[in-house]
Image (cartoon, rainbow, N blue to C red; front, side, top):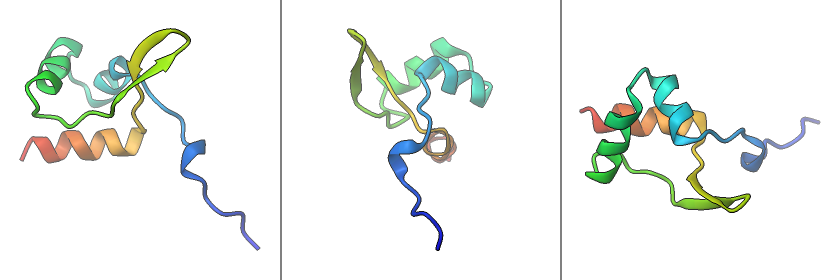
Length: 68
């Protein structure tokens, strides 16, 4: 029997990492988020720092969908 796939075990990426992964300059990516062009995950508190935690696949889907 296969072990069930658990969503929470997926690695999470920062906004900077997602921008690099997509080949987009970070300021342009941040601007698109602020303008509502890219739906972003909510801010999370990570060690006292507020940051967005993206799943790699979801970030690619969101970005490509926003480009349509």
